[in-house]
Image (tube, rainbow, N blue to C red; front, side, top):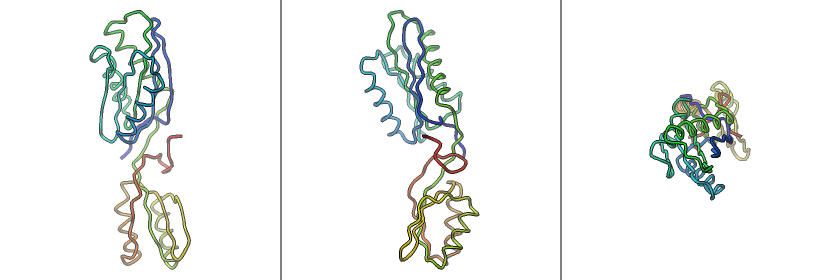
Length: 210
């Protein structure tokens, strides 16, 4: 399954009627990572009037107006995520009040414009779900296993050579079950696949985020 997410962290600022709106954008792969990013931005702007946000991560969606009138900040930021088709992305828009009231409509436009500017600064990338796996291989099977992984487009992450070979590699999440079955068949059931974790990567299976 392919995703659209931001290509990296970025910041953009707009000024509307003397109020500063600073958008910080980051890729996040879990709800915990999203909250960590939000708290980081809050900590960086303790004197700000508001730190409004929206994120979608790991199937979880959250938004906050952070004291702005209901529906004038978090929802417009989240709408930008939806319209851009972004997953696993967090946006925090920090406002420093400039002394001039913007009204509900003005706030919606301001937070939306700031969020869009942040996404444009970050850039958008296609991402796919991948699995990092580890196996132990007898030397006699190594060539066969390496050929199998090459045929499946696996990316080798690490190789350790001792009494046996320990290989860490990455495959598309959609191929995980097939690769495990093929390794079991190739080794008469002697190769067990250990899952290290899941990650969002580019089409070449390398990280898309700097």
